Image (cartoon, rainbow, N blue to C red; front, side):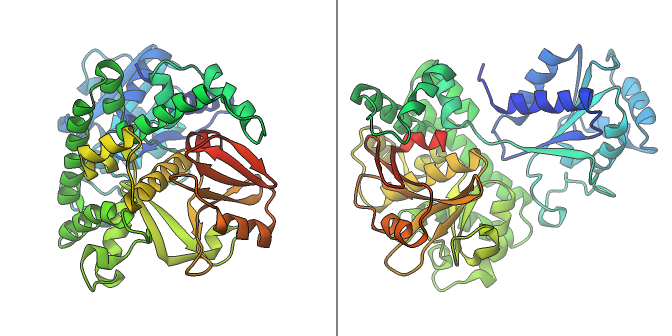
Length: 443
């Protein structure tokens, strides 16, 4: 059983329902295969006396529960009439509405179900980040109205590096012992560093998709990893074919398939010409938006100046796209790339792109929005984040080369701290904190 941080978010939502009389359902969003349904089932079975699950894709006949009057009283009455043997226990029942995009009335009804304090309701579904105008699937139903103000939204991702380590049997105390070296002149012992560098390279290759991590934790077979990841990529590609509208089907697929090629270039900024020679945002802009809204990619925007709020300084036409799970990215590159990463022999621009992708993924999972800073043609900082009321620069080096861009940034803007992530041990140089890549889990 995989331990997930999202479980604590579910517990907190339940506590708020009880202690603060929070009149909101929980809506869980995220890409396919990241473990949304699994964690809700685990939560419902462990934390409630009664757990009722409705999958509107598999149990289409149960959509009739939400036909007619949408008061909570009528809905729960029809629920007992259509699902034999269920128990509605006041204060101890969780109702899970899965694949809710297939039942528009159920999404509308969340407003009324949220106000019913006797029972808790969690909803989830596929591609909920898409607006209904972006989705061409006949199974997707547009709700009469969205339950604005009656949903607590939680975005789930694949496992982060700490969760990956938990799956390997490392507990939080062991992991947190690494923190004492953060920002310290005392170097991490070489044996510990080498072990965690090896684990981080495995994380790059295996990724965080729950099915992949669970299988690898048991079988330790990278060929099985590749097979499962290929199946997930095929599922994502099928989703594009099924859900993207009209001509966007082909264009979205072309954009998605082009991202590994773009990340393997020296210039990582997304260029439409990488998708198709001579093309611009006029043809592919909608396709990029579809990929971002579907949570299949993470976007990182260039900024005009490094001041809070960073989003106000975005250059919307200049961005990078990263695959949502780096294990899937390395799968797209092929088995030999995985082998080179594991053996630490990979070279070239693709190496830099892979390390940017994994750091971007880890930062997103830490709750940060992604920005980068390229003040001129010669300098670039891979990431800027907002932390503790300040802009914090992060330079990512696949190896351990000089940090000209970061040094220039420190000289010009005098940040309280700046991070340089490298393939070596830690150190400190003024405001510059030098850390191994895997220390991103503490940033």
